[in-house]
Length: 132
Image 1 (cartoon, rainbow, N blue to C red):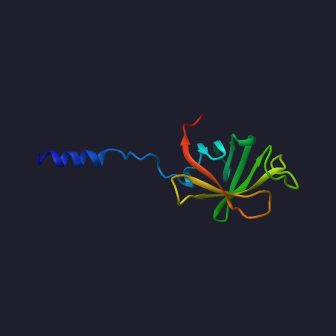
Image 2 (spheres, one colour; image 1 turned 180 degrees about the horizontal axis):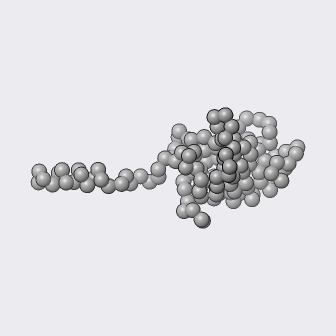
Image 3 (cartoon, one colour; image 1 turned 120 degrees about the horizontal axis):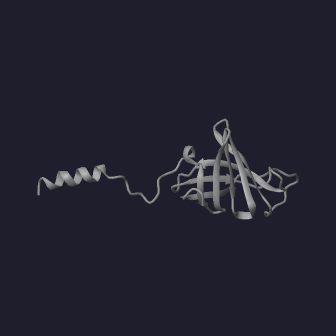
């Protein structure tokens, strides 16, 4: 029995961790995600990211400025119509990407048009198999 304990401990230490989900970071943001705006696909695009999501034919782009990724989202329809188009739509707003301290995943703060606070959350809950 006393020889069995070190063997079990060694096996547990050598086994990969079995987490339900790894903590994602901005560095690993690319890929397919389940979000509160529907399935979302993220690609690297130059100094930032571009992507699409299923809600209202959504699309977005982010670029790294100073110390944060920021950019815009646009949809075919939204709660507010902006005064001028961005990304081919009058329905758009600003985005700011950040790691979430509340759950595994990533979160974006967002708002409508170019006015107001970025006081709403776009929640990237978990990764989907790429290509979905």
